[in-house]
Every structure is written in structure tokens, then in C-alpha cells.
Amino acid sequence: MSLTWTPALDRPDLLAEPVRQALEAMAADGQDVSVVEVAEIDPDHADTAVLVEATGWDMRDMANCIVIVGARAGEERVCAVLVLGHTRADVNTTVRKRLDVRKCSFMSMDDAVGRTGMEYGGITPVGVPGDWPVLVDARVVQRGQIVVGSGLRRSKLRLPGAMAAGLPGAEVVEGLAVEVPA
Picture: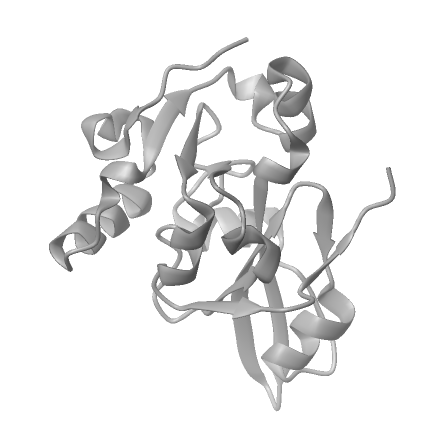
């Protein structure tokens, strides 16, 4: 299966509203967002492993965004985490220490969807709430291109891996993810 890629802002119908707004704001700030492309997919292929199987793409070019929540002294702390498809976030050590919490976990699906304005299975670091840090595994920025959610299950974004380091709130973190055994 091959996909048709188009500059993302040419197809706002394939972007969740917060994603469209974030890309427009980045463009207004002088960033070249023409390199961010979008392609329509079958919503049943939104899961990374399913899309890789359908397309034959390299799992190392796929990126997953997860939302993590923890608390310290009654204060909630939230972040988005971006890791490559062949890895998993080191939530219990690296993310927990970065959030400075005793324990943290994946945000519930309903909360993540409600607070990001994105669909579950399509959550992307592009357009998450501005007060959330976006922790980016260092391996992500080394990839020529990554494929990540568009905020909707029916499409994906493709962008240079290095661009992830310039997303609002982004912080590149060495050792944020560990490789998943094949």
C-alpha cells in the first residue's frame, strides 16, 4: 500500500483542530511547515504495528506520542513523550525523573482525548497543550523523516525527525526510550 502525501496545511480536513492551529502558529513564527505532510489512511491502520504491516515501512521511521501524568504535592504534572516505533518510553525512570514525581502513568484515554482535542490512536506532539513539555527521544531527531499521528485516526503526518526538536515545549532527552526486543 502506498500513500499520497500532501503539505499538511493544504489538507486541514485531515488534521485535528489543535494540530492545524499549531502548524499555522509555527508558520506564522517563520518555521517552514511545508515539509510537514499529511496522508489519508484507513482508520483501522492507525496503530503503528498495523500500519507498518500494511505499508512495509521501517518501524524506526514511525513515531508514537504518549501522554504521561503524575503528581507531586497534589500538583498534577503532564507531558507528551515522542519515541520511535521500535522503542518504548522509559516511563518509570526517565520520564518520572523529568516530571519530578514519585510515580507516573499513561493518562487515561478519555482524559488524553479530552485534553488534547485529538482522537485516541492519532495523538501527536504537534498541538498538545502549550504548558505540557514534549519529551523527544534523541533517536527521533536523528531520523530523516518520521511518521506520527495527525490528531485523527484517519491520517498520518510525515516530517523531518529533526523538526521534532523545534516543536513548542520540546526537549530532546537521551535515553528516553529503550529498544523493544524483536
